[in-house]
Length: 144
Image (cartoon, rainbow, N blue to C red):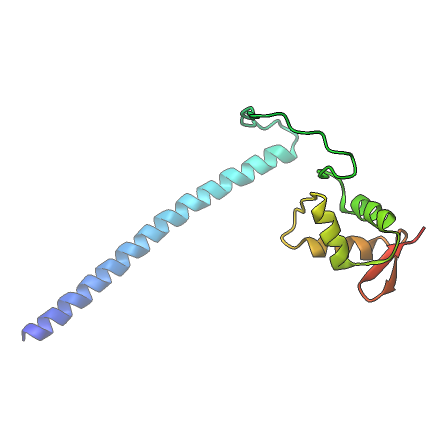
């Protein structure tokens, strides 16, 4: 009889726990829905051209002055992948594979927004057929 009572008590506790969990998840869902509505409203304001408030940036303290690097060895920030590929191919003077191009550009300090920069370089080469010519599989040169 005790064994049966223990099983029934355990089942009741399990049902109560499941119901409590379900209730907590419903509350969280409601909270997330309201947050989603707020984000959508803000996106609508941004799309309408209303100004958004930006957090003030903290000044960066530099302990020692940075040395000036020659223009050719400086990291390239904000430059397009297309411009960097053109510069790299001009500098090399011969056709390069997509992987070689990507390594050369990354060595110069380029930061890709994508997880796999090779895909950015590949897409740029294949979408700009007027500037880049395919000489072999995955190998390109300038079309000029």
